[in-house]
Image (cartoon, rainbow, N blue to C red; front, side):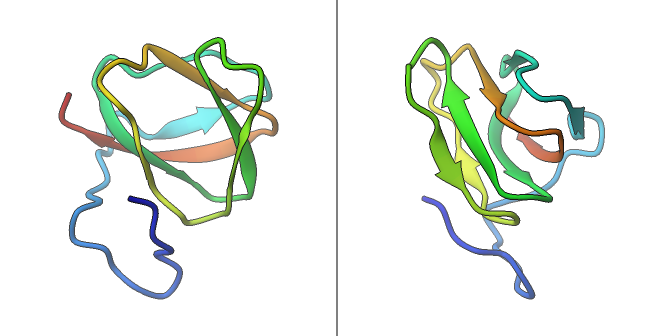
Length: 85
């Protein structure tokens, strides 16, 4: 359920300080404990081995399905992560 959080708050997206971090271009990020993410810049997020990235605007959270193991992004960014898996 993506929703822009720019200038707003979305009560379902709570940031976990310990899971949030900088990610580099193409870095594989394990989602073992992550249930949603948002980034400080526009990214294309590639879920697992899918061949196509999903465009995700800055500040827009996206939920991570329980079947997902990892993802990567096409640009360096700061990842805001929500815990809870």
